[in-house]
Amino acid sequence: MGLGGVGLYSSSSSAVFVFDHYSFSHFKFNHLTSTVNHLAPKSFSAYTSSTKPLLTLTPKPRTAMTLPSAALFSQNPVVSDVVATALSGSVALFFLQLWKETATRGIFDQTLNRKLVHISIGITFMLCWPLFSPGSRGAWLAATIPGVNIIRMLVLGLGLWKDEATVKSMSRFGDYRELLKGPLYYVVAITLACIIYWRTSPISIVAICNLCAGDGVADIVGRRFGSIKIPYNKNKSIAGSIAMVSASFLASVGFMYYFSLFGYMERSWEMVLKFWIVALASALVESLPISTDLDDNLTVPATSILVGSLIFYFHQSL
Image 1: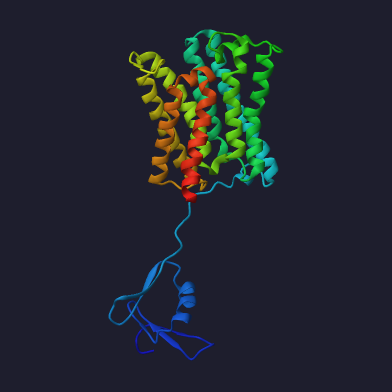
Image 2: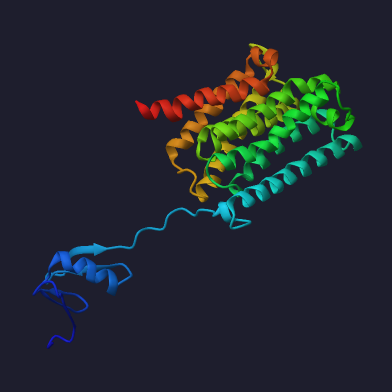
């Protein structure tokens, strides 16, 4: 070797490779690739004598961070999911007890307290989804948390169990029978979004974010700054509708980024635009008189799922 380089010889061929820092001689493509992979784990380029790149080998780009949730708490994925359920349930119970206590002490007025429950429970529940393993088992176990509250709303709403503090924190007028309407629709919508769509679908994001963040913030802002009413519904204000679109949209985009960190979905400007469209549609339906008659805890998630299915899935299939 008179070139001061390194020589490589292939036993399956008479080809000899000689290379220094900038050139390769007697280049043979099918042998070079396998040889280089062993000698150069870092990215580099193969050059001809004219110093123009002939071949660039680059390490595979790092994929999105994934949380080994199936073994987060235990090597047994079932045990891990059970622990994740207990932890997520504890978080939900903490917030329920917190708002129950504030309602009992009268720290906030009843309407504001009810909306703080409305905003926080669904959002914090969805933040816990990465704790669970992928697949249907994780989704079903996660859904047991709002599922328990379905039973709770039925028992309280039917008068089978008395809990005045809980009724006060979740109802408009302190009537336990109210829990059979809005609060029941609320937990049913979150439960179904979790089971059917789970964390890999933007449908679950829009259904829960529009219901919790959007509808909750709309009521708070509307009551304080809603002097200008919507012409076709005097019970709704322009300020409240703008607040709903903004809160729904920002929460949806935030969860898109959050779930993309774990590799559950890809983030894109196209998806951001679609979140905006669904937020607008949900706010429009929420502003209609029909939402007052039927309850917006039913119409908002239904609209989010319907419009979201059309623009996220049906549009892609065309």
